[in-house]
Length: 230
Length: 230
DNA sequence: CTTTGAATCTCGTGG
DNA sequence: CCACGAGGTTCAAAG
Image (tube, rainbow over all chains, first blue to last red; front, side, top):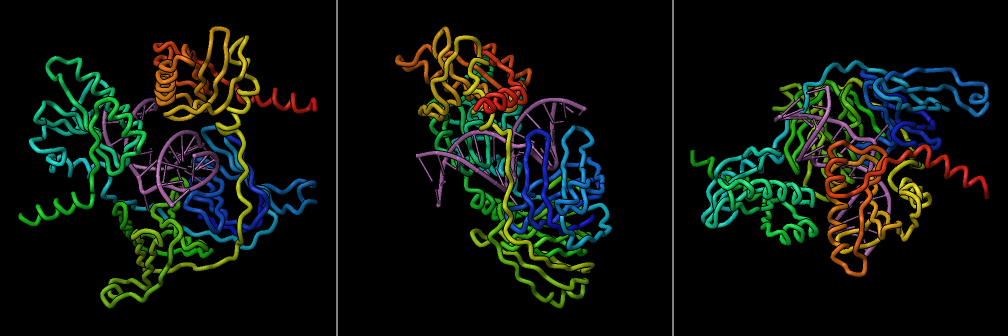
């Protein structure tokens, strides 16, 4: 990894065009040829960048560029598209390289899959008298997150961390399909999420889909309490 | 901005839990307290990070940690939530700081807003005899990108850079709503995008929605030519 | 391989 | 301040 602190301007041309006026920034060049241009603020997203695989060509500035104070030109070219990044370096304050090696990678816990497991274990959160049929119930157009039996028949559950209109549309498609199957029909829908957007709730209820808000911490707490019994 | 190259392990606890085993990485500390942990590969997303605003506390390792080779402990705490990042540094290979100042920021061109402006100006791309009614026509469920008058009545246009099934669903909802309004009905739909996925095109045409592929460069060219007249 | 859906999404814009 | 939509999204898993 090469880290350069430099006053520079940056131009990206590809799926859109973007330009950064001259300022002092960090240029990070990774082993796979990707380049990141970071400022001293914002979040983890660089101001501008080139995704790997890419190749960096360092060139001498043209006479015109040199006259405008450019001391080096970086051309970064994506290997699989014609996206390109042009960096005009005007002053290099630091330029160091380090060998980092391959990273062992990240281990995660607490994503939608965990939410699904917890809801399957605590299916009564859908209401009294609910029992689990199965998770990831396959249909022709994809898996329904959770299938359950309720007091009034079969229930298809679409699960999201954040409930948006897309999720309601998805559940609607499943319900249409399943209600065409005489062995399953009638199937009612439940849209379960940690947060449900107002527009999504309106759309869901307009279509007779029930909305259930989930409390992940409480569910995890119950899970931990149950685990401690064993 | 502070740049540290170090062998370290990293733990994140917050909206989920995530852990990085010990390896050599780049630690970037920005002026707003945010911390980024980068490896020498992947794309612009860090392996692990803390979003701003945050505060970094550097501590001495406990006796137990020191016995395991930890030479310093970084606690990064988010200011607006209880998210936290714990970095155990085992070997510091480099540690430098630079003043970067505030960045003038990115200038973009070619996003959906530009496409919408260009299509509104060149509304005849929808076909002969079309005139613009207005952009961002508000409905109860959100704004229709472009509303126009065609030879056969009112036309609602949904505009995307990449035409996907979601966009067709969105336009369908608008059309259903608008066709329930006797003052507007009948309203026909046009799905306009730079690229339209085959599945989206099939769904759209199945619902009587016309698909129009847009050539951004050509539209920009016309725009530039028109600008030069003034 | 492509396709699909989640994300500690981030980032703008508008109410 | 929150809510919504777009993204050069990135990322992993599944078909």
